[in-house]
Amino acid sequence: MSSEPYKQGAADRYYGRKYQPCYKKFFTEPDHGTCYRVIKCENMTEQEMLDYKRGWNEEQDRKDWGDGQFAPQQADMS
Image 1: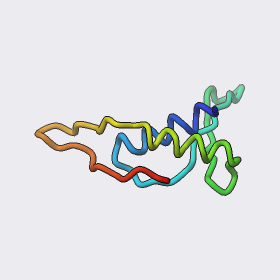
Image 2 (image 1 turned 180 degrees about the vertical axis):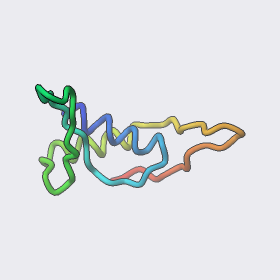
Image 3 (image 1 turned 90 degrees about the vertical axis):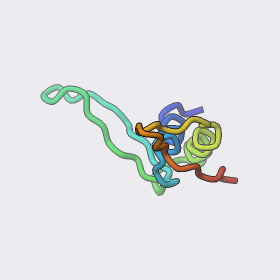
């Protein structure tokens, strides 16, 4: 399992964002510290795509924005 795609899928669903496979790849630049690149679906491996979907489908919580406002419920992806 690729943990970054999994975590991104879970976070996207938790915050009510649309299903859009991607993830952040972190690296260190000597002059800038920790940086990241966004890896979009067209550059993801099949396993990374599956991990994103699994993270999405397994996330059951939703962000509580306060005052009874929660992130919307979204359908599982098959």
